[in-house]
Image 1 (tube, rainbow, N blue to C red):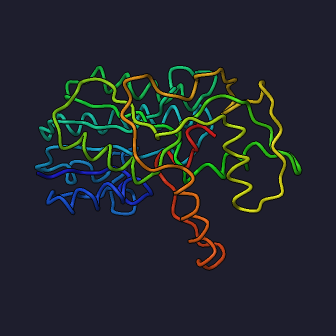
Image 2 (image 1 turned 30 degrees about the horizontal axis):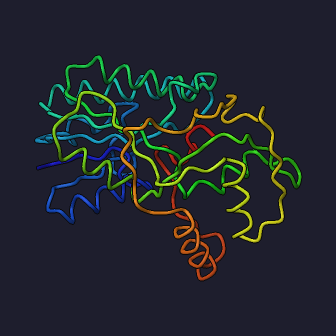
Length: 272
């Protein structure tokens, strides 16, 4: 089965490609680097020839409100039209837990627009909404930093490892379309402010986390459950403290400045 992964060279996409190939599937990464541009349509028809499934983990190169809306509307429209012409039988898209609760944010309004295009198309589909990635937790602190303080709301959050996100998306794309939304999350709930304190402490980062119920997340105020999934979400196995210990050990043994390439939704920190 040929599966085309749009955004297949990034953090999540590259993991999906590897996992699918390890299970004997013909997984083809597609991105501007390989001559496939969903925004312009360049290379789409050729990439989707004989494809059974298309997985979209791409993301906008700009997160300004108008630009990100244009990206998701245009790229998703181009992709769905190309899939219809190629006879693709399953469209899988990676989205974000809590998207419908974060509509103060232009980014999340754009993601809702993307989801509605998918739901309204003729292509059978599955939308996988995932929680924040462990790999981006330290960036959340950066976005909320002012001087030596980090101001964050005490909202619940249930992050997960990027590898577990890729596993979840891979399982969905080799199954039958659900024609709906699947939620995936990590095994633990944290308060956002406490999660960042834990991360900074493990990394010996001296910044102080200030708990502020009105602190915004991607321009949106959070309530208790804005960022967590429903009770029927599929939970991954990797625990944050285990991942964090491995991550800090790897960073200590890696040359300075060498970070994993972040693309797809991770680059946006799910709206950071």
